[in-house]
Amino acid sequence: MRHLVHVISDLHLGGAAAAADGAPSFQMCPPTTHALLAAFIDRVPKATPDEDSHLVVAGDIVDFLAEVPFAPFTPDPADACEKLARILAGTAVVWEALARFTTVRGGALTLMLGNHDIELSLPGVREMLLARLPGPRVRFIYDNEAFTLGPLLVEHGNRFDPWNAVPHDALRRVRSQLSRHAVVTPAFPALPGSRMVIDVINPLKQQYPFIDLLKPETAAALPIAAALGGVGLQQAWGAFGQFRASQAVDYDEDSAEPLANNFINANRNDDGALWLAAQQIAQGGDTGRIAAPGDLLGKGIAAVTERVRAARLDAVFAAFRSLARLRRMHREAFAVDSETESYLKPARHAARAGFKAIVYGHTHLAKRVLLERGALYLNTGTWADVMCIPEGIWDEDEAAGRSLFRAFAADLGASDLAKWRRAIPTYGRIRLDGADVISADVLFAEGDAPVTTEGLMARLAGGVPA
Image (cartoon, rainbow, N blue to C red; front, top):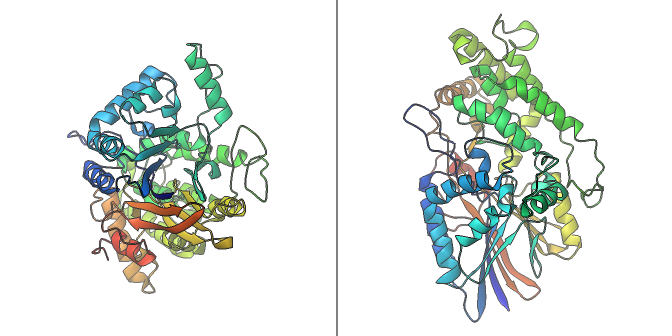
């Protein structure tokens, strides 16, 4: 039997739009992208007698962390249902397209749990989700299983991220207690990444809407926020310390699988230099180079003079240009044929287990990497908006790079993101014939062209799609 499988992930549906009173938008996926997503779903071919059609939505379908009241986890099913109801109402065009795919066109739809939507697994919330999607071929995978179809393996990928690995034993206990209307005890241990979003990112987003859109996803945004005068950075140091402490967990060196049943995996990348840079800048700069007496963490943007802000931004610019690792991370993040070992290691293990196409999401960065034994690793990218540090800040002409960085930082400080914020939705397409992968690729949703580094960078820069 032949199968055509389309994989999308990281839709991040939900969050309030920008308000007239100046409140920022918490929509990582805005209404214009909802329409693009619905149109894409309507283009997924219908099932035929010769070739079945599958659509896999591989996690972070909705974003509970973007819904008020903000919480790293919403354990009460009634509260979680209220949040989901708002999301469904505000993104109805997407759910209507999914319903057409499963009913009118006879497609198979598989939904998978991510790390921003773990409440979807709760009793009551799960039923509300599935009630919105009629059809006999709808499946929701929420208990740490992967989606497999012959030689194809798909999972969200968060279990290889120490910030966002879900303790599924604890989540199963919560579901078991809720199914019996019992008191949830002990409380579900919220993910470190979710706590970071609620305690650090969301407060910073009130001032700087760019804070959760800037890629690569390192501490790079924090030095900029610190220089601009962002508040809430004190919590970041504590969260980072908790993260580093959490690394004292043993993992299998070959497969990158956990040795502790309740947790999933961790990598050992150290972003400490960037966090230290942010802290130094927020406290007045490195070794007294930038003097800002009395303007320490938590004083806020109003206390930062233009002179101090300009000096701080010059320090950030100098730090970015001097940190070779940051430049390398920036380039590798958007290189389609490059992926970090955190994800390649388990992908290689899956290839050795016999899978020929391994597909992850989670990182928001589209990838295509050839593995051993002819297997292929794909990352489906995201339907949320993304931003990146302009490549030109590393130009050989330092003055030109500084001018570009100042313009970039000025727009970020003014929350004028239109020049830099981009919707670049991508998807995976895999065609199977029995145990064989006929084709597998990651493509731009607009135009259906294969994703290339050049095409991705052109779109990030605002150029005309290739």
